[in-house]
Length: 85
Image (tube, rainbow, N blue to C red; front, top):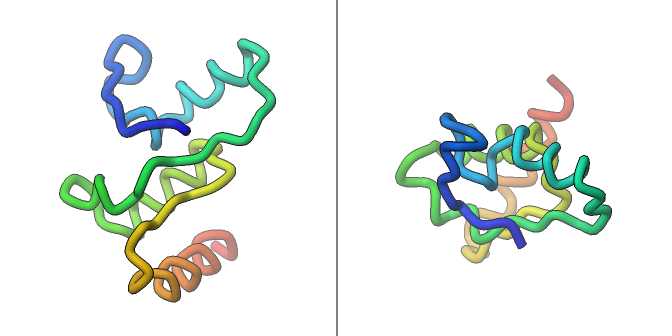
């Protein structure tokens, strides 16, 4: 599970969950397992749900965790729109 840690020495812009730099570093180091986010709702004070979702997908996460069941349909709809764009 990847957390929402800030690692400015690796990525000065994004937390680990949203960082393509960190994800590539993991893969380059030989990690071949699934990369799973912590609860995406935890970073919604800094990012909109849709922006965080898009960046998390672009970063290379394999599974995105949303604890709040009330956002399930909206997240699926947004993910479909993001992938189609």
